[in-house]
Length: 256
Image (cartoon, rainbow, N blue to C red; front, top):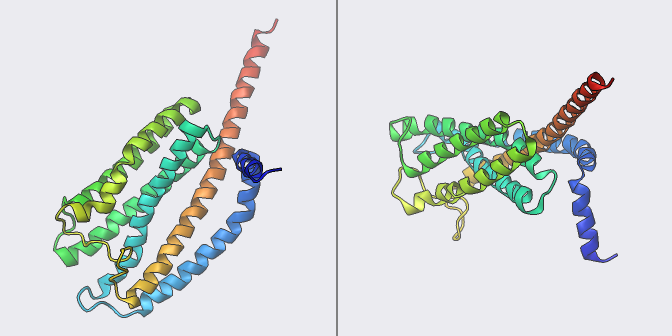
């Protein structure tokens, strides 16, 4: 069998919900353990480093705010890839992935907004400003809420999957706006200090716990996402069984 055939077969295996459930059952305990380990290390580093000479103890908010902001965009990117899987490749689990990711992304975005406000009050003297970065992240939060409401409002799963996928792809234009807003417009929000072509500008003492916490939050996302996908698959199976039972009951009533 050729390498291309093997790759296609593996991709097809992942499209099988039953195989995915078996894989998730094996992977989730390991992911949860790794997540707890990195969170323990990240929190220890976060509270043992000294405060910043300008920001003081409020610098520790960064260890939650930055990973949350990163995950808010990454989660929507995962949804956009899943939307392509729904519209282009008709992958059976693509819509499951998108719907499972939406509430998680909304939570990370909300956490980024709250921690950003907590940091902004002592640093900027205000809880909120309508600059490009903050406004675009707030728009992202509203998009998450809108997609969650849409998924719950539509009863037809196939129609809901197509409509949601189109809206996700249209809304993806907001992700580069969030990322580059500090470069394109004059905002109060500081520019990128970690992922830069010329290297990070943040002090290594603060960079180490930030990276560890970013890994911990990323592992948390994958743990929650896989668990949510598993729950969504079981929910759809239960709903399908109920619909089948209702149809069978209707046939029995119509039978002479």
